[in-house]
Image 1: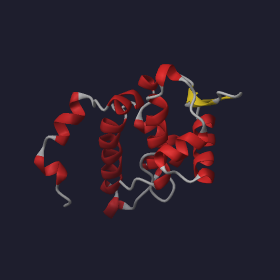
Image 2: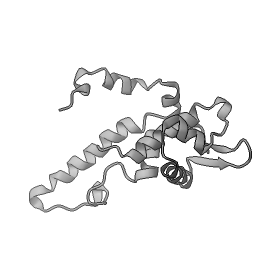
Image 3: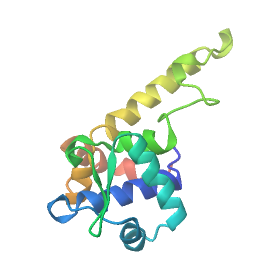
Length: 152
């Protein structure tokens, strides 16, 4: 899996918003400053997250951005899909839509299994988890495996 800069920035911005005191909105300027995200790029990301129903903007002097629903209901997978599209795509198509000839047809199953494995992690981690730096046991168990850290 290749994590784009856009996904990384989106997750980092949402961690800041999830960690806000009493769910107070945080301005785009403040988010950009805290996470060193370029302003124009951040504006685009925030707009994507708003379109996906993850964030709402709050107007006014103490306005900014906040979650549209609890941070515990927003997963890392939701965020990545909102800013970059499907978790796995082949030539811009979802794995189940790709057709291979007879010699390579089992490759489709590899892509479907890879997507399932990504979901198994990214759909379990919420923005609330990341904000409090406490990951679900299924994730910490995987990270505890020494081979997980090897750059094969």
